[in-house]
Length: 61
Image 1 (cartoon, one colour):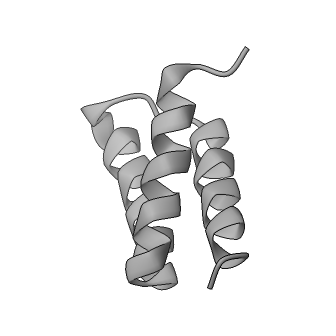
Image 2: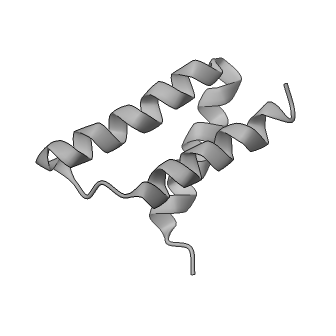
Protein backbone atom coordinates (compact mmCIF):
# COMPACT_ATOMS: atom_id res chain seq x y z
CA UNK A 1 0.00 0.00 0.00
CA UNK A 2 1.19 3.53 -0.79
CA UNK A 3 1.66 5.69 2.28
CA UNK A 4 0.32 9.22 2.54
CA UNK A 5 3.90 10.54 2.51
CA UNK A 6 4.45 9.17 -1.00
CA UNK A 7 1.21 10.82 -2.15
CA UNK A 8 2.45 14.13 -0.73
CA UNK A 9 5.75 13.72 -2.58
CA UNK A 10 3.93 12.92 -5.83
CA UNK A 11 1.52 15.87 -5.55
CA UNK A 12 4.21 18.32 -4.43
CA UNK A 13 6.51 17.43 -7.30
CA UNK A 14 3.60 17.39 -9.74
CA UNK A 15 2.61 20.95 -8.78
CA UNK A 16 6.17 22.32 -8.63
CA UNK A 17 6.79 21.00 -12.14
CA UNK A 18 4.28 23.52 -13.50
CA UNK A 19 6.36 26.32 -12.00
CA UNK A 20 9.69 24.89 -13.17
CA UNK A 21 10.59 21.21 -13.66
CA UNK A 22 14.09 21.79 -12.30
CA UNK A 23 12.62 23.32 -9.17
CA UNK A 24 10.70 20.09 -8.61
CA UNK A 25 13.87 18.02 -9.07
CA UNK A 26 15.93 20.19 -6.71
CA UNK A 27 13.16 20.28 -4.10
CA UNK A 28 12.76 16.50 -4.13
CA UNK A 29 16.48 15.82 -3.84
CA UNK A 30 16.91 18.61 -1.31
CA UNK A 31 14.18 17.16 0.90
CA UNK A 32 15.87 13.77 0.94
CA UNK A 33 19.26 15.33 1.70
CA UNK A 34 17.61 17.26 4.56
CA UNK A 35 16.11 14.01 5.85
CA UNK A 36 19.44 12.19 5.54
CA UNK A 37 21.11 14.86 7.66
CA UNK A 38 19.04 13.72 10.63
CA UNK A 39 15.90 15.74 10.09
CA UNK A 40 13.68 12.86 9.03
CA UNK A 41 13.83 9.51 7.30
CA UNK A 42 15.42 9.52 3.86
CA UNK A 43 13.76 6.97 1.59
CA UNK A 44 14.47 6.03 -2.00
CA UNK A 45 10.72 5.52 -2.46
CA UNK A 46 10.22 9.25 -1.79
CA UNK A 47 12.48 10.05 -4.74
CA UNK A 48 10.55 7.60 -6.89
CA UNK A 49 7.28 9.31 -5.95
CA UNK A 50 8.87 12.70 -6.75
CA UNK A 51 10.05 11.44 -10.13
CA UNK A 52 6.68 9.97 -10.99
CA UNK A 53 4.96 13.24 -10.09
CA UNK A 54 7.38 15.16 -12.32
CA UNK A 55 6.99 12.75 -15.24
CA UNK A 56 3.21 12.83 -14.97
CA UNK A 57 3.16 16.65 -14.91
CA UNK A 58 5.45 16.87 -17.93
CA UNK A 59 2.73 15.16 -19.97
CA UNK A 60 0.66 18.34 -19.58
CA UNK A 61 3.37 20.85 -20.49
